[in-house]
Image (cartoon, rainbow, N blue to C red; front, side, top):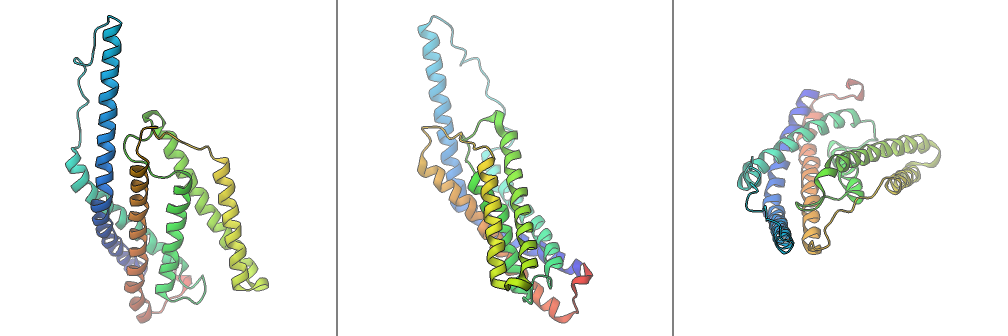
Length: 261
């Protein structure tokens, strides 16, 4: 049955990827185009300023002799086939992982139905994998961020994801241990408080990164980040809802026990 759940999770992920692709194409890609245009304008202005400075100092401008770096993948491919492939594969992969987590969690987190369990897990995934990391290190469009700090920024973002997952696991363990003494609701509130405190400590201790150019339009940055988190919200909401709908009849027909996984 786990194999059947895995297949349904991947199918739900593919559907989620298709919806996320449509959202990104309509709302995300225009912001990327505006950011690229801003970057090109800044590079042009910098080149003109450098040429003027060298001319005034009696030096020779090297701007005409510089050759642009070759473009490996065109912008049209990036915004079309590349975006489609990346989002759909991303959705299928996380849909499969989601199904495996569901197979382990179903029946272990209370007497919840398949749909309720799926929705709860999708909400937890969106919170730990998207919301918490983005609060500390939000997504940035092109022209924001220095090339020599890409590695550092990636490591910090991944560290925030791992800390968020670890905080959630600790909060769940504490809540389950306190349930018999405090009751479900009170134990849940204590677990939520533990999660918030651990995440807050991590976000205070981890270094901040602010590489947004002073001239970069604030509205464009805001719209890009909203589109980025909106894409993830559509992805996880679709996976949670669609997988629950597909898994419920399967679990209703067969006998399922948490001991299977």
